[in-house]
Image 1 (cartoon, rainbow, N blue to C red):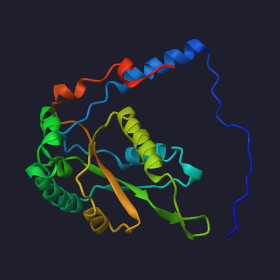
Image 2 (image 1 turned 120 degrees about the vertical axis):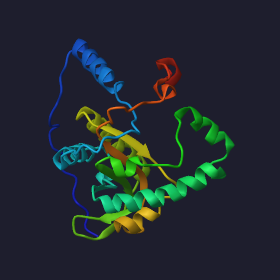
Image 3 (image 1 turned 90 degrees about the vertical axis):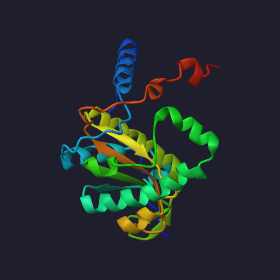
Image 4 (image 1 turned 30 degrees about the horizontal axis):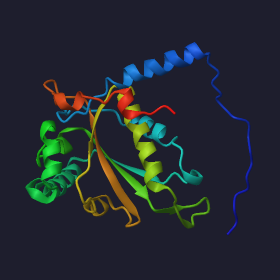
Amino acid sequence: MATEPYVPIPLPDRADYSDAETIARAREFYVRARRRHTVRDFSPRPVPRAAIEACLLAAGTAPSGANQQPWHFSIVSDPAVRRRIRLAAEEEERAFYAGKAGAEWLEALHPIGTDSNKPFLEIAPWVIVVWGARKSPDAEGRMRKNYYVPEGVGIATGLLIAALHHAGLACLTHTPAPMGFLNAILNRPDSDKAYMLLVVGHPAADATVPRHAKRKKTLAEISTSI
């Protein structure tokens, strides 16, 4: 199989800030990031497709092993399809909350206030399904194995969430397990694995968040200096 040659090019888009500017920009981003809230109460207010697509393009800039970009995003707005997703997800969630999760996991979830009812899958205007592609076509259309799929998809999803927040939108990460039903509903190949659903839209006027969810670990708890 022919291999694309290695061709180095000059680093584009180089940033050259002073130390003071670097610190200020880092702190500014932190201030913006801490305003992100996971939302479960959504408004049906429409969100332009163009906004979603711009955020997906931002996600697509993520680094990945061998630049294989092993992600795919299904953006779902069709009410009938979102209804099918909700019914299938709630079936899995009922089993989860009925004991499949185990007592320790359910105890950890208690302060979050979640249950098996997931109306946001129909109320919010967009559901984005995040896929990891175990295989994908190369430049010549031949299927190839992808490497470091979970790592690449995780980074891309983080960028997507940050982009959605930057755009003024709210989102919810939802992970019913297992999620094999999504392959059939969204016509994705078996080589694609659904990692999560991102529910995206504007918060409802009476939206709330669990107090527990805003308790973030300190710098000392999440890092070690050596």
